[in-house]
Image (tube, rainbow, N blue to C red):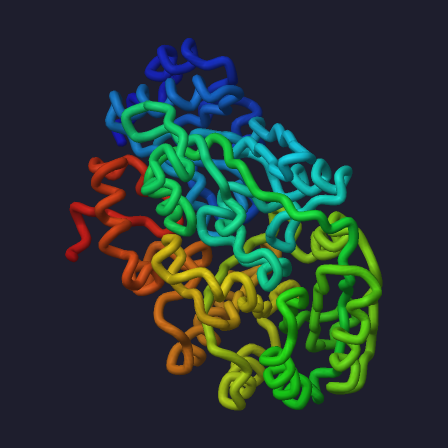
Length: 456
């Protein structure tokens, strides 16, 4: 990038076009605006366009392209790899957070800056839910474009399986709608194909009536982890769609590492007999299972991933808790590199597994567990040992893993794994990229496709 773009005068034309505000490095509040969830990300954009309207987005796309500058999109800003920030211009959607619910049609219209919390705070008023992640600060747009694992996956599918339509600003600055009738090919690509095709400015979701869920943490001693996970593996083959179980390892405040299970049953106390066998798998140190709203469920995990801490993620997808995988998780994963690090295994089954591999860009439609390896540490720590911790576990799991991986957790050095993750959908995604973004304007995104760089 030429140094002229580090001077405010070069951006006067763009600033004049915006309803929102343009933040440049010399501004007093630039650093506050620049910061995203992962404090490890230090990228310094030449300008951050905080958009308030769709027209702001259109102006920013067109102006940035005319200047030949890199472009990135920030919605929730929760991507571990920090792809929301480029060295050029950032389209910041964080102020576009309006959520509108139609309780009769059971749909929600969500602006692309809205977080899971924004959505749930609104839908809870009507006793409605849709598939979301477990951290309330995650942006709905980014969560959805990667696929969207959820503790509602068994009952309602992935986030993308509940996506009805989206409005997108394309690389040439046009606003288009992608739904079942208009640009259905683009809707297919947005369902798990990342941000390759444009700036998603709003999304429409299907909602489901669910006033309460049955959920809560169950904790077991580390010494019983092998037995508990082995029994869990057998149990998961028998459970109904209504029950989805997040599992993994966390370190307690007093220093002990424990195995956790976080079941979620879509229903009320009638789910107690379904969840009850989990308590027989080992010594339950802590049992928090109770009836709660989905809003309560979402917020119970918030304290584990505060903004500003440093994070690094790796991922693998596995068929289940085979003995060698259990051994690898315990022997390579423990002890943690930091008391803030954790291992989470997201349960994929039920409704999500009954969608055909070619029906959405997200191709891995068999029952599996998505392993999320999150190294987390305070800014003053030496990061290398934390990176190595996550890398070592991922490397050790790789021989037992399914091909590819979850694109939202793959970093820029894992391009070949992105291709494997898309599987038989890869060629079709390349064609879509060529159609909607042939010049690769949207290259700073999860699941990046580069038609001029990648061979077929």
